[in-house]
Amino acid sequence: MELMEETPNRTLAVIGAGPIGIEAALRGLSVDFDVHVYERGSIGENIRRWGHVRMFSPWKMNRSSLGKRMLEENGKRVRGKDDVCPTGDEYVRNYLMPLSRLPLLKKRLHTGMEILSIGRESIGKNEMIGNPKRAQHKFRLLMRNKQGKESVVLYDIVIDATGVYGNNNWMGNGGIPAIGEQALREEIRYTIPDLFGSDRETYEGMRTLLVGSGHSAATTLAQFSRLIKESPETSLVWVTRSDNEQPYEIIPDDALSLRAELGEKANAIAANPPRNISFMPGCTVESISRKGRAFSVVLQQGDRKRTVKAENIIANVGYGPDNAIYRELQVHECWASRAPFKLAAALLGESSADCLTQKSHGADTLKNPEPNFFIIGNKSYGKNSSFLIRTGLEQIKEVYSLIPRTLEIKAGQFLFPAR
Ligand SMILES: Cc1cc2nc3c(=O)[nH]c(=O)nc-3n(C[C@H](O)[C@H](O)[C@H](O)COP(=O)(O)OP(=O)(O)OC[C@H]3O[C@@H](n4cnc5c(N)ncnc54)[C@H](O)[C@@H]3O)c2cc1C
Image (cartoon, rainbow, N blue to C red; front, side, top):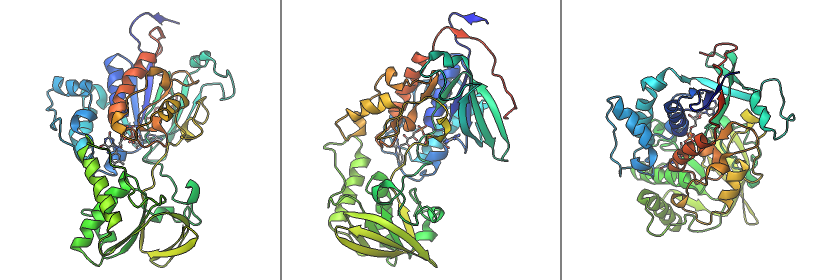
């Protein structure tokens, strides 16, 4: 065994090529880790799914000084003015894609490669409990490419930056699926449609049920109010669980002005719904069925049962982390948010609803009993929706401060080549 005093050169797998995965890989490479990134879709896959929506946070909050510097050093122009808020697509096209093409990163990014499960070589979850010596057993990553071929790769360190957007919450009462929801899952929309682009045909002239009262629901609502003006035969029933007649809390002097505008607009619709939009607060979704083109949705509103018929359902009811990939590791999770426990506990102490006041909570909160396994980015917040890219960029620096500086050098050992 060869020991190295200063510069680490260990194998590090980053899972997920969203903004945090890409930036984490860049930082690792810049300090000489042997990094590979595995992404089940394409670069910025989750952001592309809402790419038509404008972000609340401006460019300066969504990119790191390291990323900018690397682009400049490679002769690339850094696009996007600091104070302008890009759309999701602009962010992917003008920042994440150029980063992914940097010579340092390009050959180390494996798109179309889904991580299915992570364990430790030769030991199980219930062995060496909380023992740092688990680190002597490499991580085994089971992955599958687009052709369905599976392979296993070994790594010393794993950063899970798989986000939450691929894993929607259910819309039923109590957060569990409504009766019939699971069977109809593929026909229900859990993301924000692009009503002035590829999804117009699906919704124009139709009746849609929208469930939710977060910022995604407000974005969908704002699009419908515009579409209905252009196409008055379109209609929307908007249902929220809270019985608040003004569902959006407006932060005084909100520095994210687009967020404030969106909340104000949604509250104005709730207070005085325009023709063809009806607002139903205080409802839970009990069951969903479908006959022909029409869904029939049973709602409970106070002590009344109501049935809504609609051709489309959009459930903008939030997302949560998928913990299946690390089921065989020793990860201490919060029982309320499914986030890594220490960070979740720090977040529970936050009193403000404003994600702008969030800052990173320090390196220690990113540790969990499994040595050299880190959950960062949106997934590290679990079901808490206040995560911002800016916080994830801080977490990256903290993670690297946790990785030991005296390291055993071994080249990445590929059992079955995954490329
Ligand atoms: C409408 C909307 C607007 C938003 N606006 C803002 C904003 O203004 N500012 C802001 O900071 N944040 C905003 N967010 C939140 C933003 O999406 C996140 O902050 C950001 O995407 C988090 O980055 P991430 O890298 O942690 O996760 P993600 O961007 O979700 O990336 C995770 C990646 O992991 C991949 N992946 C998942 N599972 C696997 C697997 N098993 N194997 C391999 N790859 C996998 C996914 O395909 C994805 O590419 C917004 C979100 C929405 C929905």
